[in-house]
Amino acid sequence: MPRTLVKDALNAVAPSDAILLQGWVRTRRDAKAFSFIELNDGSCLKGLQVIVDATLPDYPQVARANTGASVEIHGRLVESKGQGQKWEVVAEKFIVLGEADATYPLQKKGHSLEFLREIAHLRPRSNLFGAVFRVRSRLAYAVHQFFQEKNFFYVHTPIITASDAEGAGDMFRVTTLNVGNPPKTEQGEVDSTQDFFGKKTFLTVSGQLEGEIFATALSNIYTFGPTFRAENSHTSRHAAEFWMIEPEIAFCDLAGDMALAEEFVKYLIRDAQEHCAADLEFFSKFVDKELLTRLAFVLDRPFQRCSYTEAVEILNKCGKTWEHPVAWGDNLQSEHERYLTEEHFKCPVTVYNYPRAIKAFYMRVNDGDAPERQTVAAMDLLVPGIGEIIGGSQREERMELLKEGMALHHLAEKDYWWYLDLRRYGSVPHAGFGLGFERMLMFVTGVANIRDVIPFARTPGTAEF
Ligand code: 4AD
Ligand code: MG
Image (cartoon, rainbow, N blue to C red):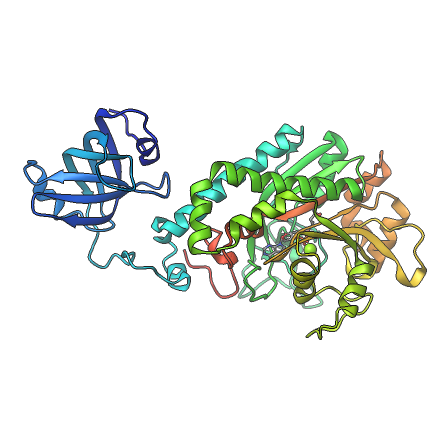
């Protein structure tokens, strides 16, 4: 007999004389004549109530079915007389597949997120993490659906790379050299020509540069993969390994880029509302009471837009004292971004046209700026509760200006010869952005720490599991 998922049993339209369920015991309550078991198999938030009658030949098994044990039940799906559920299962055969030791750490009482992080191998069995990872799976699917429906091609960009896309210098080194005793050059430096790839290599911080190669061939592409940053940030929004979605669009400018970013974020929110309603309701009950109203509000109106120069004016005129004072030319800090989206605009806001000096080398120089106030066509999408979830830009398609940008960032042209070739052969205006998948999940679920929306968090000092 094929197995029925708890989700499908709960949504049944008719009773059934023969049903097979497999899952884990959430709770068990023993009465005189029978036991109640709440069975969960991860297919949905809710468990299914199973009744095992004490007259059943298998009944002695029930004593072994502690919280956490895996069980198999053959029985009948019947209308429930109890409250809060439409269906329940009357067991006819009850088999314990794997007992749970009395040390099973997930007992009925709520556990702190910190504690659950220490048992990341078991936390997917809790209500909260089951919900988080169901939403994560659904939204990964929706990412592909969104772009595929728009005729974007999915490109697998490399994880090991020799180039630094963001120029932030916070990359993990990849090497097979003996780190205790590496080969040295005559100058006494590590001799990378003897390394596996014959040169220095790293884990990628972004698939963008390779994405541009494909956008200038297939027109519209996206990447969706893991990225790695060795920045030593101990915040609730930074992970050393995270997933990023990076569309790259040929024949597109910054305005088109910002419009696509807004459409994409709204699409993902709508998809979660539609396909993960029960899980979102759970978050709004136990994680963030404002969640559902905030998501509805965000969908309801256009995102605001504001230039960097306007943003700096707003920040300096609002009367707040900042931990990091901000003048034109400075990076916006988290406190500034949060103020703009949470207090000033009170909705998602895209800040655009940043000073050239604080942004990456590949961003397109805006025409007509005063020389001391040169800006690039960059944009960051900021959302309440998190700050930046998207960073993007129009790319510099003009060879001379791109070379100038590389010189400004002290990058050697020879290391980017293939990137420069894209400007040499059929260069086109193009633009793209990167959405941090975990930050998007934080926004959709209300979960406040990035460690709790990624199955296995990699942060400074932790790489267990
Ligand atoms: O703003 P970033 O650095 O932009 C890029 O990497 C560009 N190459 C994207 C592009 O234009 N194709 O990163 C993009 C997004 C950020 O807005 C943030 O959501 C996320 O990636 N992000 C991180 N998420 C978690 N942990 C980190 N350490 C992150 N760093 C960036
Ligand atoms: Mg950024």
